[in-house]
Length: 193
Image (cartoon, rainbow, N blue to C red):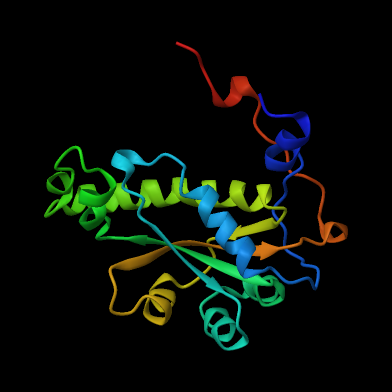
């Protein structure tokens, strides 16, 4: 079992941040996040997530043109914004990632399976990404308020990658947090059969 401190960092005290301290995130931290999140389970080890870390002023301006008005200021202030994408041709990597079976054949030409698998598993990897960022000492601000077509044209044109969601990263300004929202009780969300 993890220590109470680790559980608090990953879950209990973790919050979605919208305001950020003026403190940089290093390349080494971004590498550490990826090197942790890549070990999370995906079906057939398909690992469809592809990440673009947006940090430069020029690239941030391009990103800001894609986000909703409500996400503009918090994205502008974040030291880094990660675009969590999904490679719609993830199955081309399956001979490398799942070599003990012909997993590529399960997906090639089956668009419904490709779409469902890419979305489900890149979402899982996005959750692993946020836990890895928290484990690395950073705070997260995941968002889905953006123009997906515009973002895809801006950051993934000519590729097989599409955006899933975006996530601001940095050191959150805890003084700007609003009270924590409630969660459903076990009996409201679960049943044991």
